[in-house]
Length: 131
Image (tube, rainbow, N blue to C red):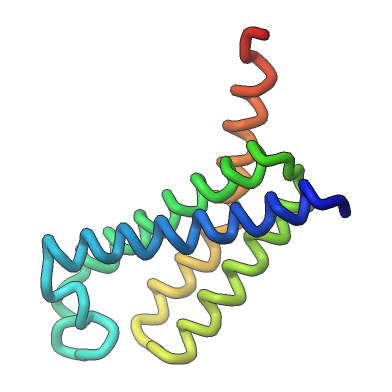
């Protein structure tokens, strides 16, 4: 693996982390209760919509991460590495904030498809770009 491919993994992983954090911060500013949904059982039971918003935001971040990885020079293998690393991070987060299980399962199941969606979108755009 050459430097460009390694750098693409770092940029893709960083993009997902940065965008997920930015979305979480924005959601926290708009809906203050979203900051406590993983620590409070009562809030978690009643704020279904906050989980859906968080899920969507992380998936969008994964699409952008796949796009960034591909744009820097990554291919299928590098996007798979980025997705795998994000799955490991989400698995670690799952251990520290156990419930609700449906949220974590959907999040993990959506990571690789979203990263590869970003890969495919960028591949198609680069293929048809006018030179």
